[in-house]
Image (cartoon, rainbow, N blue to C red; front, side):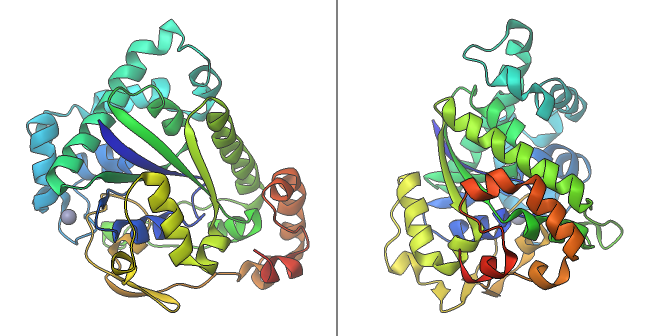
Length: 316
Ligand SMILES: [Zn+2]
């Protein structure tokens, strides 16, 4: 049975950073956003976190051989069809039922089974006790709840909705496509609604009995060492002083990883500064700040975020 830490939350909440730091722990293998593996890697042959094309990365080559006798045997169109049938936000109410509705059952099993095979193979090839999937999507976490052979432990990463909204307005290139493509952007109103929906979906998952540990991105960065120890404990793996030696005062020293897909930070090797990005407090226009604050107020409060942005930078 593969033990999987699934990093969930709305995009731009800091999941890639959390994944990179977790990936430095000796018993952990960080895989990136497996939800995108099928299209971006198997089909489009984008770059692995190690810099090589997916097809040229020896780690993923071995994982593919072990999981599927080679990636070429995976029917990516079928994966896409399955994803539409089961892994969409609109399916969450049915996925969250006490029993899986008969109409969904076979497709959910088949789809979740593909992930379970990747996790198990990656654990074997890497020798790690825990693999990390930072796919983020709440619907996928609800699907994985039904996977056989997966010891699923969700880390729900929450970041102040206004910081998330500001980040979604910025243009970020996707280096894996050699600059020809940019990451998606959302308006602040849209990202506020998504923030509510995705975070609520992880709350629902916890109420269904799945292990869900919620962390606040801002708090994580306040004391990464303590936060990582907590997460290691949650994952059931050791994190002694020597294991955390890659963390310095305000930085982390990162080695090469094999993240299959995700935020450009997955390519970072060497020193990564660890500091809170509170640029939104000054840079997000007041009207947008108020809008996002109002739309997200109940859950911001529930997570302990002050609604007054001046206080938001002091606290957390
Ligand atoms: Zn690689």
